[in-house]
Length: 125
Image (tube, rainbow, N blue to C red):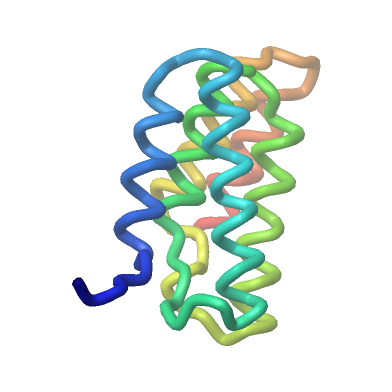
């Protein structure tokens, strides 16, 4: 049997499976796999380009389950930085990325969250 290597779709499926568990443990595992995928791709172990889909799944899950907007924002900023540094246009945040970050700030309900969400909306324009 021919040895196969996982591709981006394989990682997205397992990340989505853990994220959809709706538990803190599941979300943490999804984030761990995202980080593992990112490291292996950037180290050259896998020959596929990463995109924003897996990041969006993790950001949405963290915002919904952990209600940790600061963590979601860190992932969002990491996506933007990697996309720029590595010239990966498919990794740039999209409407779904921005929405996940906005929802995370709303769910957390910390003082000033409405202004934060409005600033994100303006950043999109």
